[in-house]
Amino acid sequence: PDTPIWLTLLPDLTLVLGETEVPREGLGTALAAVTGDDPEARIFLRADRAVAYGDLMEVMNVLRAAGYLKIALVGVESASGAPP
Image (cartoon, rainbow, N blue to C red):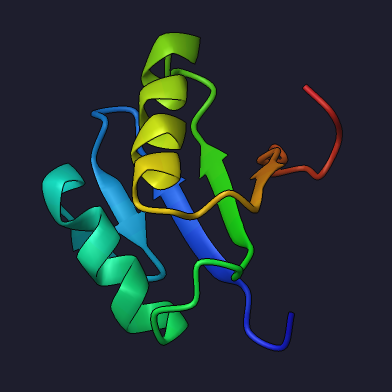
């Protein structure tokens, strides 16, 4: 996409959409604002490796409930760029 839409799940389970922290219950509204209310927009979801799988799946379920089904999971590289 021209401008990727990044959603980051931090170790403390805080959600950050682009550069803005968003509450989980306000994620659908925030995504609608960023995407122009386009549920076909691809969301790039990344999470810290300290985040449990179940917590990541909960965020994916919130995305699905908001109508966003095009979710790309993105790995976060280490500072050296080498795989962990």
